Image (cartoon, rainbow, N blue to C red; front, side, top):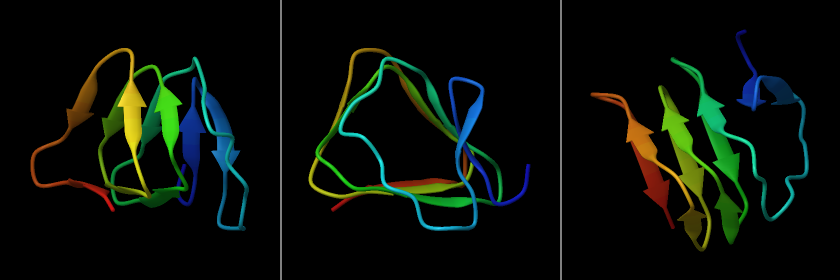
Length: 76
C-alpha cells in the first residue's frame, strides 16, 4: 500500500497528482510512513492519521480524529 491514500477502503491517490473533492461521507486513512495533502476547506466523516497529513485552510469532521503517536496533522 506504499504511496497510496485510502478513503473508505478505496485508493483515491497514488504517487501521481490528484484533485480532491471538498467533502466526503467516507472515512479517510493515511497509511504509516506516508505523507498526504488535502486542499481545503475539507469536510468529512472520520480521519485516521498513521503517517503525516497536511490540510490547507480548514478540516471539519462529523466523526472522530485519530493521530497515531509520533505522527502529525497540520492545518495551515
